[in-house]
Picture (cartoon, one colour):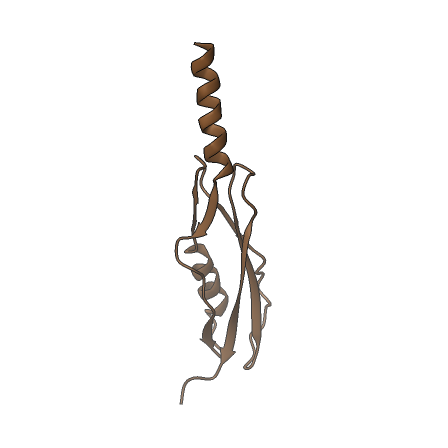
Length: 108
């Protein structure tokens, strides 16, 4: 029984060492319209769709971002948002990506 336990720990540790965080769909930059009252909601809705997976870890990936509502969106604004994903096993380094949300007048 002791050998079985040690063997199980060995295989578990190998899987944890090989844990890898990957984006399910890579986050991308996008453009929103000037003077749109839903810009903040649109950004938050997009961020809420971002997911990542962890191979070799039984726990789900933790996705977080550094966005906060700027309060006023003006034409020409570019809001850079850092998005991170990490495994909950604490083995694999966090992956990070920056996206830009551009506020622009695209309506004729």
